[in-house]
Length: 467
Image 1 (cartoon, one colour):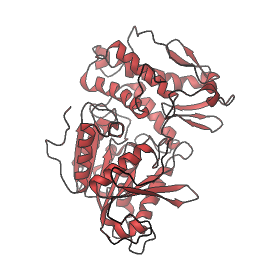
Image 2: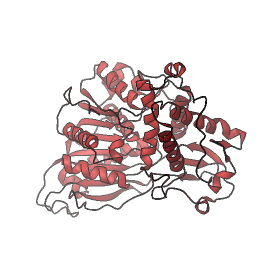
Image 3: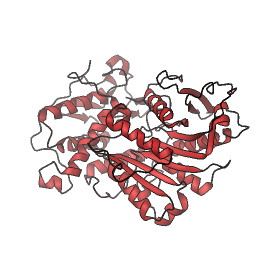
Image 4: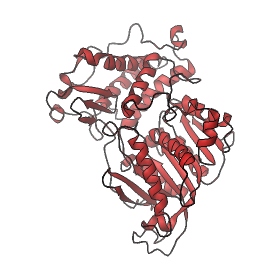
């Protein structure tokens, strides 16, 4: 049963947290001078809030509810989890203009989402009871990794089968690429008369732009087969009339980076090889135009799209493929030093750095170009980034928005030969368009992506969706 009648999508809860923190930094709603100086601190007298749930059985040996906090029982766990609590307190404290009642609702729903899977608000003790398996790492609010190596995800695990979408006529089907690694893709084809026949015996052989899409989820949740991305790709393919390849790459922590990058590259090369006239896949061989290739993704998928464009610039692409554009929607980038308008809160920054180290097992530092391309020298942009055009979208209340703006600024300043465009949606949180696809702002952002694929350019008026 939803807490206090609220049941926002799981992803929205994360967005709300980003929103509260970013709004305080960007607009200075917090009145405390120390907060305006960049160090966000919890209020001196926070409201008396208690978590409105029973702690799941599998966590009782490690954490306990103490008043307003979840507290670690084990000294070794405390620095990590206590930092998470302090960070969340900072995020909440930053919302100076929110009423205490709204703050309460946000906290309650945040807490509920932490112990939730899609389709059920609270996990039951019976379903969570697995003995004395100690917690090794919390990646709030996505998952828990236990010392045994077991992983418990709290969201982003639902899947739906491929199908023909009744509202758009878009057909989808799944293809396994590598049985050893589990790499697979979901293909999407718009309605083309009888062109959706899987045997390839279609009379209509119209060639379409090819979009290789990488889903988001912080490198740890979601898949190409999730209902969230099925809905988004159906809409994109229908409106843009493209053939899309949505990549189901391996996730951390079972497969730390660079596994996702390796899968993304393998799937791209597979798509191009099958787009040859002699290719084995009937949709790609008959309908994909590799001379109109686009790489796209949201959040972590935006990060992947960037890194695939960089690898294409270094290694090249076969079969006459030309990357016409790279679309990064609320991309996941970070770095050691804050960029303009980015939070300077020490706890928040340390937490993001720790989470990044978790997904890559420390292989890439926080200023490595794969996570912080803003730090690349200009010649690296010019030499490495393949493509003719880049689109970056950001949401005004997203903690990652400043890094997206900095990406576009650095790319433009580098002397890169292509065009870089920035589209900003004020008043919205991270990847809001996945949660509210029919909202005015989400529809407008979809139009921007569609126009980008078809060569349209943003005017100064169109580069910002006013709230």
